[in-house]
Each structure stands twice: as structure tokens, then as C-alpha cells.
Image (cartoon, rainbow, N blue to C red; front, side, top):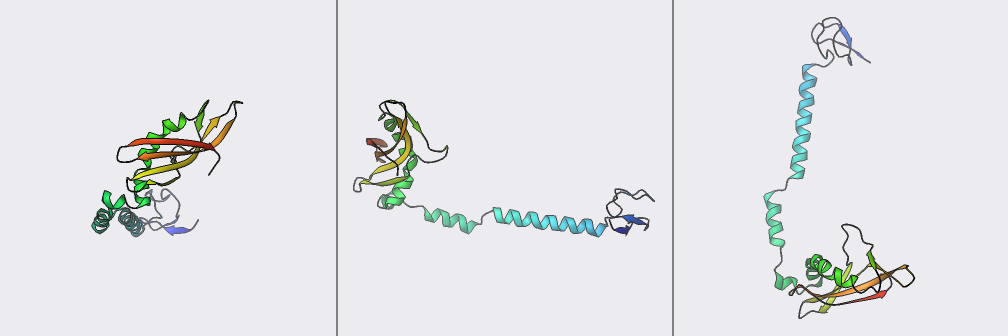
Length: 170
């Protein structure tokens, strides 16, 4: 609670006062210089935030050059497997569920992939085996047991070749 001179009548006023008790001016402790300084700081902050959030043209052109064609991607397991993991998760879900003798339930998160791993089934044909452990099958006693499942998937045909499951966890 410091006292400052009023910007209008120059009488001593508390700097947190809403109006001067002597002349009635609003915000008597805040000078025009302080107001302009605050606005300049605010503009600088906005400019810095906008420049950090926007990308330059060089970054956009570099992203375009990173895209790999299918022929090159199909020879690398990581590229080919990651590229087709979402369609494999969609096409393989129902066949994996049908492997259960009774009922099944998925224990993956909402945005989590159903398949955590993949490997080549046949590199020359470009087929993959996706592997996961995010399902539980109900047994004859009503208890749920975790299973490891595998789905052989053909990205070119967008079709499931074969599915397998066994009790366990990765």
C-alpha cells in the first residue's frame, strides 16, 4: 500500500485506489507511461506466442520431402507396419473376437492401438503379422483371461489372412 501522487491533481493517493478521493479521476495511481508499457509488453508476448505456434515455409517443404513412396516403404518393416497399423486394427478386430469360445472384452484404452507389435509374414508379398495382448476371453467358469493374438494381414488386399490366439501376455 504505497502512496503515489494522483496523475491529475498530484495529491497523495494509495496506488491500489479505484478513484482519487480529491478529484475523482479513475485509477489515480496508474500513469499513462505505465499503461503504454503494459500494452507494449502484452503485444510482445502475443508476437512471441504466434511466432512459436506458426511454422515457416522451409519446415513445410521439408515435411513434403520426407514422404516416402510405397515401393520404398514396402521394403522397410517399420514404415510398412506403421503405415497399415490402423486398417489392420479395424479389419482384424472382429476375427480376433470370434476366436473366443464364450465372450471377449477389449482392455485397450480409447485411443490406444490394439496391436503393439508387428513382423513380416512374407516380405516379398508385403504381408504382415500384427501382434497384441489387449483382449480377454471368458472361460467356462466365467472368468476372463488375457490372451496374445496374432493377425496375418495383407495391406494390398486390405484383407485378413488368418488369426490366432493363445493365453498369455506380452
